[in-house]
Amino acid sequence: MRTFFEPRSAALIGASSRPGRPGRHLFLNMRDGLGDRLYPVNPSADEIDGTRCYHSLAEVPETPDLAVVFIPAAAVPEALEQCAAKGIRRVIIESAGFAETGPEGAQLQRRCLDIARAANMRLWGPNCMGMINVRRDLVLSFMLPEIWKDRFVKGGVALVVQSGMLSAGFLMQILSKSPFGLSKVCSVGNKMDVDEVDILEYLVDDPETEVIAMYLESLPRGRRFVELAAATKKPVVALKAGRSAQGAAAAASHTASLAQDDAVLDGAFRQAGIIRVDGMYQLMDVARCLSMGPLRPAESARVAVITFSGGAGVVTSDDLAAHGLRVAELLPATIDRLRAVYPEWMTPMNPVDLYPAIEKSGPAAFAVAIDATLKDPGVDAVFLHLFAPPNRSLNFDYDGFSGLIKSGGKPFLVWALGYGPSCIEMSRELEKRGIPTTDEIEKGARILAAMTKTRG
Image 1 (cartoon, rainbow, N blue to C red):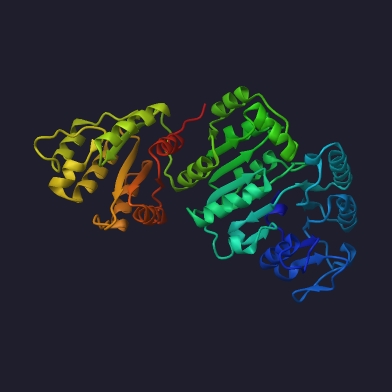
Image 2: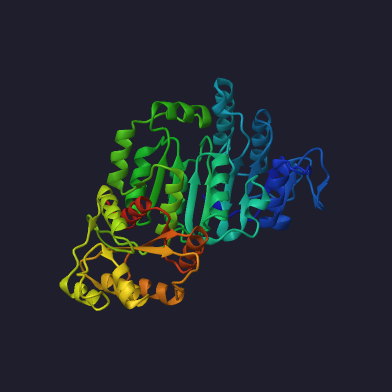
């Protein structure tokens, strides 16, 4: 699999010089990552933007590590034959028109697989958007260069998406709304050969990947997938589509995916410690927050809630319980520390309603509450609520604030509520410093459950 993720050279079969064409996007993206070891192949072109274009694969002066194929589906078998003759053993097929289209497409797909197996060749795709190795600035995808150029944040989250255009949508959302660090982005399509198990095996051992997030429509090798997820210490977050009969039918028409017993799959995921989510935003939010850590497995984790509103504390308590978490019982020593910043008429408890303390002691009450709850041995994680006013009157010392939180070494999450632009700024400032944030209480409870999840 390493050759797919780290090729030193590649041929592009279907390179195009026409503006706006996917074949041109592929050329531009791959040239940025491979330089003069990209070999565009197009029988109708002599050069593309000053780069020599080869009329056939046989003309290429070396045997590339990898070939990327983006031509009409009917022409793909011949291209694979040329790859086999050239000695290329790794091919990504991004063309559509295979098993997802019906019996004729399925027959064409089988023909391609037969060619590959006879040549000891591995195939990625078809009907996909390929692979992006963010850490190495390598984009083997026909996505628009404008989507990713100078926007990637290098980090520890690997994203595996069965759908092609959905992977582009995920990327656009990540890069434009809540940027977070990525290591790899994979679109696997019909999974003719390479599937999520092959990719998971690679990512489990990949030193650049810390969290694995996957959107899947089927799991043909479910047992092996679950075994791999259970054996790794890296969090695996999964959105498994096709849970309903209607969803399964849609998946079959999209990537020729077969339905599975969702109840059985759900139980297997729980036993393996796979964090299952129910939606696309959840997949991204949970993966993003897990990558910031720290993670601390605990059975029915005990959470300290620090809030500016008693009502928000009640709602949070309900949502924590719904996700198998408990409101922590604070030790007397912790309560005594909190008393120092509270008015005499109020006894602090968990959830920690901090508003009266802020009225008495000002913003210093936050530091006392955070430090006290993080140091309480009966607290496994802390959920902090922050109000973001239009005038930003809190004047946070973000560096000092994040340093205090990180010194606790426990899962910590911030929910920001208030004036929209201030919330966005607050979240960005915190996340730049490695403090995860959320925009909903229920979502936060789900994230904390993932950050404290135990296996088995």
